[in-house]
Image (tube, helix red, strand yellow):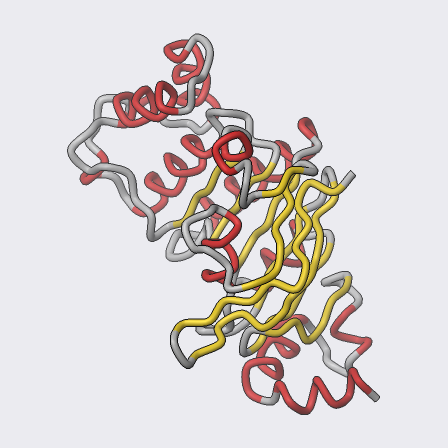
Length: 249
């Protein structure tokens, strides 16, 4: 079963076509990496999947339901985390998680919050306000919040950006464990190619709103004459037309 299916998705801002007819799907238990340079169309795509932006054309189907007509129902089983989307800094960790658990309609919210605090090693910070947390602690809090409702579709926009390698590794392990135990689907963006190789089952490279490449992140570089995923990413960023022509030929 496909958790998410996107067909011919287009988003135009006045004279700028940010997303240009992309199509892809995420299967149950799959982590899909959406990769590309800044301005490639990744955030616009995620915003449309969340229903924050309306597509200019195309369709988004989640759990076999049309997002345009069943958004509220679908979003009960979707969540999102990003380093730039920080939680209210005037609330403590416990207060933040409890408020969101109530907003999500989580059963036994107090119990769920306590479990999340333990799982994400936040016990010593439970009464600390968000504004006093380090970037790594905020990232763990963001992911804890995003898993409160046990989402079947999880959108992660650079979940480990600007945090130390040890914390990033912890977060990656938690992401992999979640997908293993729930068979949910995850759409992940990252500029850390080591991270992508470690957690993603499949990747899409997007440039100027179009998908250029798709495949296994551990095999794709060699298929295009590159020594690793980072070198392939740089080529996508600097020479997308060359890759497109190579792909079409």
